[in-house]
Length: 353
Image 1 (cartoon, helix red, strand yellow):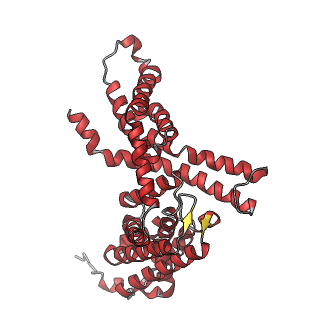
Image 2 (cartoon, helix red, strand yellow):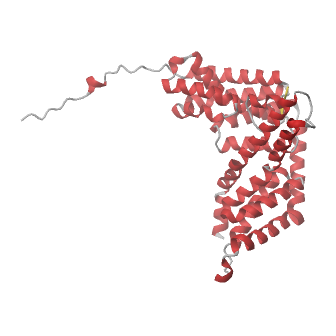
Image 3 (tube, rainbow, N blue to C red):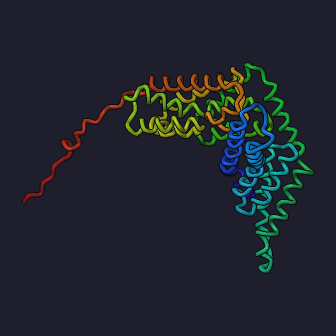
């Protein structure tokens, strides 16, 4: 029983492991879809030629999102033994309409099932068959059976209800949601809180809802863009290292890497993090106001080709970034230059006889 409790005590770690492995799949698939649309140059999905082939590659990558999430949640709980059952049951979850939520559930179940299957005592002669035959077969059968004949339908209903809730929100509620999501994105910049908001972005895109992803894509850009602008317009408030980090943050913002603002937050969290949360929240809410929608689960200007209301997207990024930059510069003090008198402060010691 204590082992079972320990698995749930470490559940955040297991979920983050699944999300971390899922993100490169989402990025590869989403960006290739965007590249395909850029090559096509028209509204709609390319039907033939190189652009259509790249579109198929991207769509295939996005289709792997839920299975990979499920597989690596299971692997975090039961090591490699959980990968096959988690992967297969994750695909089943996607196929029955349980989506991202189904991937979470199937990964947890597969991990727990495989964890306890490993503890069944076996004769030494058949012990070698356990990791490649016994656990994959039994783990997959049990986990997939639980989904298909048990809770899968209810998870799919819950996913449908969440989809209905998001699509039926009023404009006022959307703006409140934008304020919350934007603040979450900027709070820890790639950490667990950020990942919760991002995971919902992935889930909604996978369910065909793009109204959440657009504002989220805006919020992802704002922390690094804010710090880049802040260091550009008031360089006296930043050290040489931070000025260089500001240049890097600018380019990281363009490709949707929120972590670009982390060096600034690490140096001065009290002033930087609240400022960035405010800017990101307002920028995200602005994107909801402008009805910005994005068809890929990623941020940055690389998502523009698959974005509806590009003008609103850019305006929201500018609004949030400027607010974040102004706030952080108002709070920060000028850097005091070192007078380089270290030599004078050194105490000269002599050991003369």
